[in-house]
Image 1 (cartoon, rainbow, N blue to C red):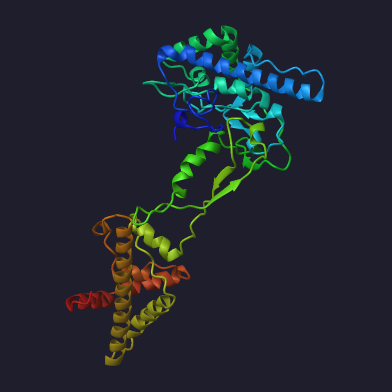
Image 2: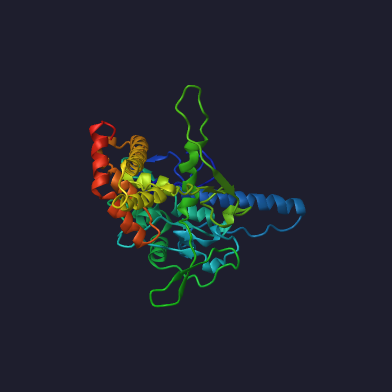
Length: 410
């Protein structure tokens, strides 16, 4: 989901009745109709004020008292400034609703980018209707859907027209107050609600530690809903398989509108688990498929038999008869046969893994010979390695390899 496509929550409504809204309502607007659209928003604010006054009048009449004063629903520069100052890319109240209101807003810009990240307001309930005016997505025909705040943060060719229409209805002072508030940095966060924010300590290049508290963008709160919606589709018979996942919903606050009127519903979290670690042999197989060295043969008895073969070679120089020569041949042949079997079985597995990864199995590196397979082991010490190396490069071993190939066995 791109920044321009990020949706924020609002009460359901229709294009005709929900003039004030945090999300697109399908109200297609001509460029020349922007001022009229903002006039409808102003009228909606005054209609809400009139409705509250009538409700208070009836209540006071029933209770036989004077009506209490009702707050004016005029969008003033002070209100616009307050709404924009309480807007940010990250809202710490989404981590803890007990975060101090004066230490709950972050506005983070992407390094090296000229574009400002989308913001979400976090205002008192009384200011939510005014926030809906400033953040109302304008669906201008033939242009991307953007709010006044979007146009102030990242101006485009239509921004002057949008700002002019807004100023014509609500006043240039209100527009200037919003612009100034959005261009300034929010109040620095100097304290966090104890016990509810994750703390990570990272090493400081200059020595010591840096205390870090990870927070996610506010738009991700509702953006996650659109990401996971395909996972909850009904599986149709004979239809494409619907993807499923493991998701957890967590209520952040019983009154989420107290955190932001632009956000609704519980937080959705994806449960992602690391795959089980590969055994050493499996890891070496996958490494070989991706261009690494051929897996080691880890059969424990191989070391014993290679060193025994080395001892038999040394003894053959002194005690050389038909019986000792036959035993020497059998030992070499057994080592070669078992090594070749390991190579063949390993190559088959590697080819299958390559196919599963949509790789060409014919492009795998050529497997090593029996001598290399037998020597590439973790020897107990250098003396054992040297004795094994001399035995596996001896004339007798090379001869037995040649005999096996001539017999069509290797």
